[in-house]
Each structure stands twice: as C-alpha cells, then as structure tokens.
Length: 362
Image (cartoon, rainbow, N blue to C red):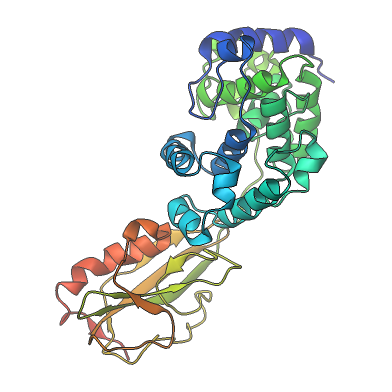
C-alpha cells in the first residue's frame, strides 16, 4: 500500500492555491475567505449543478445571467418554469434544470437556507453525493471530501492507483478522504479541482509545476500521464427520426413542449417522430396536414447513451392552419431551444428560402 503524508500534502496544495486560485464568478477567493468572507450556498449550489457534465468556460455566462435575473433562492423559486428552462437552453442535461426549480422551491418553502448537513442536503431534489459534499465543504467549511473528475485524476496519480475507472471510483473516494484536512476543507476541495484543471491535466500533466509532485507516486514511477486508467467504452448505438418544422404565412412557427420526463423534458421543440434504432423505421407523426418536404442532409447530435440523426421536414401553411400537436407561436426565440432543436432550425432555415426545393415527403 502506497502511503502519503496527508497533512503535509494538503498544506502544500493550500499554499499553492492561495496564490494560484482561479478567479471564478461563484467563488470566494482564498484572501477574502481568510478575511472572514463566506461563500453563498445558493451560488455554490447553482454553480455546481451547472458544472455537472459541463465546462467552466461554458458555465460562466449562464451563471452570470441566472444570478443577475434570480439573485437568490427565493427569486429562483418564484420564477416560472418555462423562463428558467429557456435560460438553461444550450446547457444540456435538462433534468438538472427541472430539479433546480423544484429544489429552489423546497429550500424557499423551508425558510430559504440550505441545510449545513450533507445528509440533509441530499434529501433535496437533484442534490446527490457530489453536490452535497461540495455545498457542505465550500459554503459551510464542513470537512467533507469532494470528488469530481479532476479530483479522481489527481488522486489516482498521487497514489498510483492503476485500477481502471469506473471500477476504481469507490477506492479513489476513500483515498481522497485521507487527504481532506479538517481546516479549510472548502478551499482544499477547490484547490484539488484547480490542480486537476490547470496542472494535473488529462494529457501532458505539467509535473514540474505541480505543488505536490514530491508526494506523487505516479510521477515517481513515470506513469502520471497514463492515469487514471479507463475501461474501454462500449460503442454508442445509432438512432434516427424526423423533425417537422411548419411556418405559417404570418411568420408563426409550430412548436410543442416536450413531456416533462425523458430527454429534453419540459423544453420547447419541434414536433417529431419517435427515435428508434437504425434497424427500425420511425413512425410518421406529422403534426398537421401539409405539403411536407424533406430538406437535404441530416442533423446529427450525440446524447450520453446514443447518437441521433434527424431528417428535417418543412412546410409553409396558411394563416388559419391549426395543428393537432403543439401551437403556432409568433414569439419564436431560437435561443430558448435546446441544442438539438436549434440545430434542426439552423438546418431548415436555408431551405425555407427555397420552399419549392427538397424531396416530397411520402
């Protein structure tokens, strides 16, 4: 068993963090914390939910817009769901946004304060093991261990843990807990994240600049860049389908709100077929009778568990047209669409200029 002097390693990392911490809009700097400032649990929670499966660069603008529009949990709890989902559009993993609203309302109903205790935090909608630890450590300085992808990579290298992910996750969490200090656990959690994001990167880690290289067994063995090992990923299946975009002569577009459960749940989008695998034929589902025409090419999008190809059918209809699904909207805003639906709109936009083109939809 490889041992590490946990307190010495944590102290070295915190000294580095005091001078090298990233400036992030949801973060309280080490200097400000030393002067007595405390992180806002609302901002910690919001940022951590946004950052799940998403990069810091992408989240910055969303975070600024959300906090400008809804500066505290009471404001977010009072917001209409459709407005929150529209502001979330493009961040993906839309169940996070739905849980965000439900959680905000639960916290607001309980007085507006997030629980300090990790278990109580996990009782809230959408808050799991990682997010509860992050809020408890960063907002309340509780000695909780926060383990994200960056932390897994740092810990795997420090301890030269060669078992592949995801099987090694429980072991890496146990090893990370050995390093978490009782003092400044929130800063330590953020220091581990920053180290993984800026120095101990997935490829070509900058070991010479690492503040804890003297503790790193993988660096000593010359295998840092090879860790963490990962089990081979299964190939993603391919699905396909059809999206229908109808435009009325007055400019209104036919949109529907997707069911609250499932992919893109609760988000606006174009009516469409089911998405079967490549060996099956999608069930036709035109939302109204019209002269539908297929646009050339396909729209491609990748979800967590499968690849999707959509053909886009377009139609121009009269001002009195009525649909069996969805409703015509004159206030169409492409920015409120999830990424897949925005891709379909971009794909169809040029074709609307040549509505006579394209193949008839049989």
